[in-house]
Length: 136
Ligand SMILES: [Zn+2]
Image (cartoon, rainbow, N blue to C red):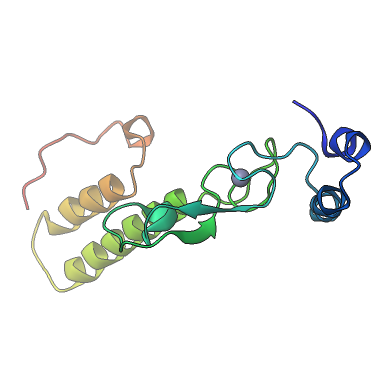
């Protein structure tokens, strides 16, 4: 893999030199092979990096390999992970709010168990006194 400085030295095309110069200013050392160092790429539908159902148009969006940095080794925030974390937090908050309205002997522990599961907290971190099967 060639660095941006090697690519700049090798080309005599002024357009390419300009592109590489911009990438160098963005901090790209080794251009991402998916987006060629631009940080954005064309997707085959309007769903872009999110996947799922999209319209019938080719759409530009943040590169889902380097996540916008344009660099092969230095990646930005993975938006899929961020979206997943956001959904988990919303589910956990919803359970906690629902639990506030419910009173009873085991409800608190049952809700806490659900929340910890939603947050994907490793069960090895749960207290030794925990036993599975808390009744709702
Ligand atoms: Zn990329």
